[in-house]
Image 1 (cartoon, helix red, strand yellow):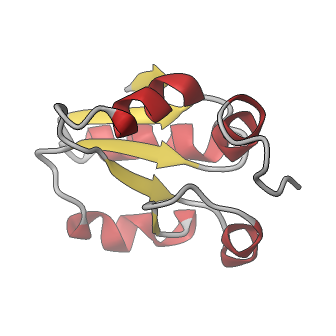
Image 2 (cartoon, one colour):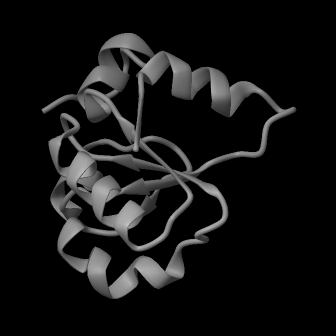
Length: 107
């Protein structure tokens, strides 16, 4: 599992020459209602074991949560399930709001 900073992710998403990663937001529904990174698929952490098969194992996957702890656990799980390229958004949406999107609602 690789750690990916918010600025690195923003640059990746803006780079049209690179394949777009699959963004997976593992926060609870109430958290996603408050704020989210555009284009992220919401799959709550507790449903990942049942829904991991919905994700493409051959693409880059970036896992997102509030501060990066839950997403790190999910990223490790996905690696153990055979996903080839999994990234954890270090600092989560909190760091994204601080470093990339200061207008994003924070909690």
